[in-house]
Image 1 (cartoon, rainbow, N blue to C red):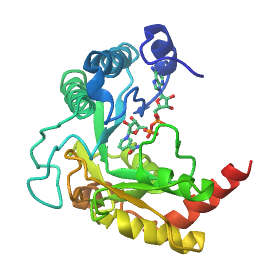
Image 2: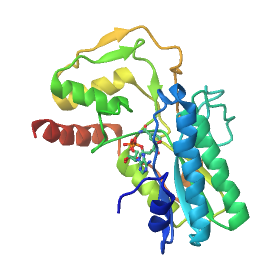
Image 3: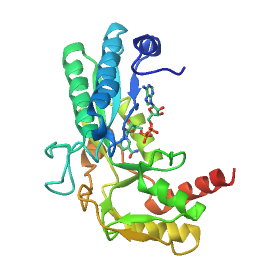
Length: 261
Ligand SMILES: NC(=O)c1ccc[n+]([C@@H]2O[C@H](COP(=O)([O-])OP(=O)(O)OC[C@H]3O[C@@H](n4cnc5c(N)ncnc54)[C@H](O)[C@@H]3O)[C@@H](O)[C@H]2O)c1
C-alpha cells in the first residue's frame, strides 16, 4: 500500500496486523531543513508520534528507525564518533531525528515497544535518487555520466564515512530480530574517505580522470566525519561487507544503465 505518514487513517491501516515497523520516512533534507523547522517538526516529529500511537493501539511490538549519523552529533569532539558522543545537532533535520529517537525510546519504556535506532552514516548505492542531491556519490557519478561539471566545496580533503546501501539493508535485517538491551547504533563503515579519493575511485571505474572545479569551502562542512561501528558489530553481529571500490563499481554500472534509458 502507499500512504501519507501524516494521515492517521493511512497509518492505522499500515500498522494493522504487523509485527514490526521499519520507519524510513523523511520529508526533509539536512541542508534545507533550517528553512522551515515548523514543517520539519510537523511532518516528521508529529507524524512519527502519530505512528507510535497507532502502534500502541494496534499492539505492534517493535520499531526500527533510521536516524542520521551525520547530523545528530553536530561537530565532532573526537573521532571516530561513538554512540556516547555528545549530541548537539546544528540543523533542524538532526534535532528532529534526535527528538524522534527520544520519543521512540520513551514509548519503549511506557508501552513495551522494542526500539532499535540506526544512526546511519553516508549511504550510497544503486537506486539512489540524484534529484534530492543528498549524497556526493550519486551526484558525482551522475555528473560524470552526463559530462556535467563536478563542484567540490573546499580542497577535496573533507572526509566522510560512506556505506553501501546493501550494508544498511543488512543492518535493518539484523535489527529486526535483535533481542539485546542496547537501543541506539551507529551504522557506518568506520573509515573516512576524502572527496578526492572518492573521485579517484570513480575515475578508475569510469576509465579516466574526473574533471572537477574546486570552490571555496562551506563553513558548515566539518573536515572529518567518521563513526565507530563497534557497538553494531558486537551487539547486532553486523559489519559492513561491501568495499568502497566494489560499491562504487556497482553504483556506476547501475547509473550507466539508468542514464542510457
Ligand atoms: N541519504 C542519506 O544520506 C541518509 C543518511 C542517514 C539517514 N537517512 C535517512 O534515510 C531515510 C531514507 O532517506 P533517502 O536518502 O532514501 O531519502 P528519500 O527522500 O529518497 O526517502 C524518503 C522517503 O520518504 C517518503 N516520504 C516522504 N514524505 C512522506 C510522507 N508524508 N508519507 C509517506 N512517505 C513519505 C518518500 O516518498 C521517500 O520514499 C530518511 O529517513 C533519511 O532521513 C538518509
